Image (cartoon, rainbow, N blue to C red; front, side, top):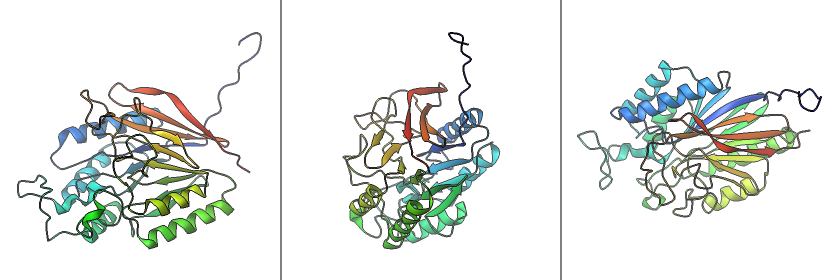
Length: 304
């Protein structure tokens, strides 16, 4: 009670979900496995009734053994239902050495982008590397790059989005615009669009970045979640209002600073998202010290 008035409790969100990226699980990296395990436990303690856990790319280094390690770890812990996208590292089956490491100077002629996508789909239970999910009446759209340097060396580490995927996205956003009554639309792609968030001026990020940007610009209710740069959520700008809202989830495995090098101290970061009828609140979390990075970011919506 304050000044003789009874304070009303804060309303609970309609639902919550978590966004992680760049977990970089391999069959041999115990640090990556430990950090994901810690982050999963932290998220479950914070939001035990979370509706969704998004793994937004760079799940693995592209081998079946890596995916099996990831799925085994997920199977040992409590977490919300998982939905995932592919990142550039999930194509790294083209770079293996006989010792189990990576050699980016020589491609494996026995591996291809097509095989990498097929492996991701098979291990994660999809029929395509992009898909839609409806949660509590809210639309989630998951995008993935579909080709790597074996197809075209100029793609580098950027996401190649096929005409089919872009056409699918255009159609789903059009449906959202007419059917979702002003609700936010949550879109996920590992690589960020260029010249948006801090750290996105170093590469294109998306081969078809101009077309994707135009699509999203036409739908201001979109929130685009990305990862890839690993840049620190606390010391760099990783949420930005454009014509849509862009937000990064940094990295679980290794956070980088504004000099584009790994932080000297161990940091692991991701996002918790609370969805209310009239707003979305994005909360940034650091998992080693189990603390919130303040302030949270709220985006209002005029839901009909």
